[in-house]
Length: 336
Image (cartoon, rainbow, N blue to C red; front, side, top):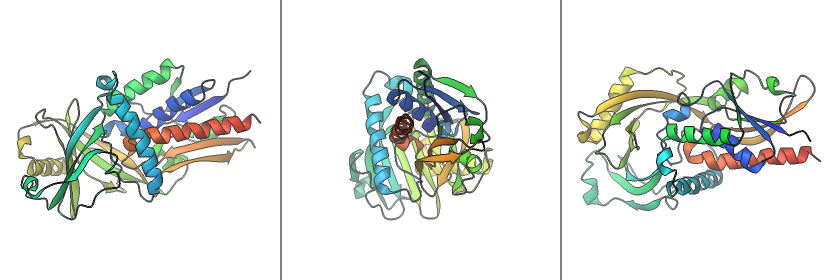
């Protein structure tokens, strides 16, 4: 019996997670992961690895809740397992601050210990009018991608490094293609609803910072600080429509100054690196099956999983599991 073949395009967190989930749900299928860029050079590697729904356009709230909740449970299981240190998964408590109103977020019942700050606590942050405190999950994305890739190859997954310019290249070679190309679908799928949301961040050496800080202002970019297991992630910018992947020194100075204003104890902390990435902003996450007609006359089933904005880590496992279910559905239907 000829084994079915599945190709996953894209090696960011959504791509590798989808490949692993397809292996788990379709154990007798050959899975190949194809990408032109791998960790540590993917957009996912730039992420702070912070669990919180963000930059998701008009994605239905019930879907965000489902995918993010599944991912929360999965990350929490990693934290409570022997691999937590290998992937840098930790519980992280901290402050969300604003110079405006601070309504309870939709995810307040998912995180641990959510509460509004008292007036006495707010005295620490004279620039903020309101704020809250909670405990969430964070993961070191570089370490995590290495670990995930190890799982994929250990389970027999194949890896190819090359750029896919057209899905016509997959016709006749694979039974299902999974598209996890993120912003790459702007050209691959001619999806003009995608747009880059440029980010830039600093990684600093500041082991004395133990809490996260997220400060949103009405007339300026949000400032955030996430202490990971290896460095303090400090950002950021959120520039819609900006395709520039180079480091902008003016952005670096602005980020650094905002961080010092919020947390003066960072003065003198060493900046270890500056990173940029283009978040795949979209009107809403695209997670669906599409049957494409090829020039040969054949039909190629494609499962799309992209457009996660700034919430790739927050949604990745929930979306990957649904992607794998859609792949299994296609493969099962094709046998009838």
